[in-house]
Each structure stands twice: as structure tokens, then as C-alpha cells.
Image (cartoon, rainbow, N blue to C red; front, side, top):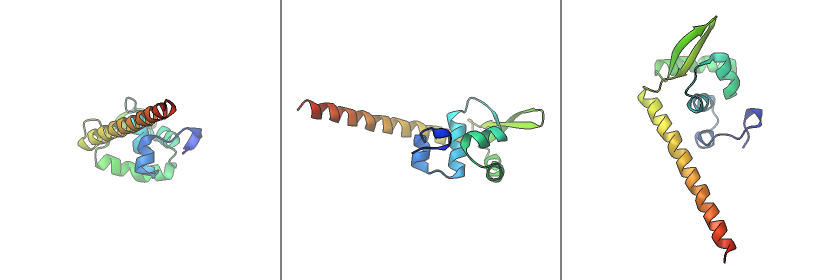
Length: 117
């Protein structure tokens, strides 16, 4: 499955679906060390500007994102890693990756064993 810019869809998107909210959360989870303007979030998540403006108030109300600073007229946001929902999303993302990696490793082992028969 391909996403915008020809990159593979993340495991998070493959499991949770490609709704605009999932795309925004996936981007913010993947790059949670940094803060981003709404334009950067829109461009990098593949979510339209107008759609993002409908999602941001929901993310703010739930305290999933926090405003970090202003650069000129741009307000920058970051995932609020102290929020319990965000903590669970981070754990879930890690578990998804762990399970998929485990399954991929199991498939490789089965291929090797099948070749040696």
C-alpha cells in the first residue's frame, strides 16, 4: 500500500485505516520529537488544510496536542506525551511494530526451513 509521496504506509495506518485523523496521529507519533506548523502537518500527513482545521480543535480539547511556540504568524504544535491517550497510542504503535516484526521473522524462518527440507 502506498501513501502520498510514494512512501509505504505505516503499520499504524495499515491497521487503523487511512482516515484523516489516523494520518495526522500517525505523522505526529512518528515524528513526536519535533513541533510543526499546521501547514507542515497538513503536507506531511497528506491531509487537506481544511480537513486539518476541523481536526485540530478536537485534538486540542482532548489535550492530545499542545502548542509549543510561535514563529512569525505560524503556531507550532507537538504531540502531548504526558497525555494518557497519547501514552497509550505510543504503546499501541510499539506493539503493532513488535507484532509485525515477529510475524515477519516467523515467515522468514519458515522459508528457510522449507528450503532445507
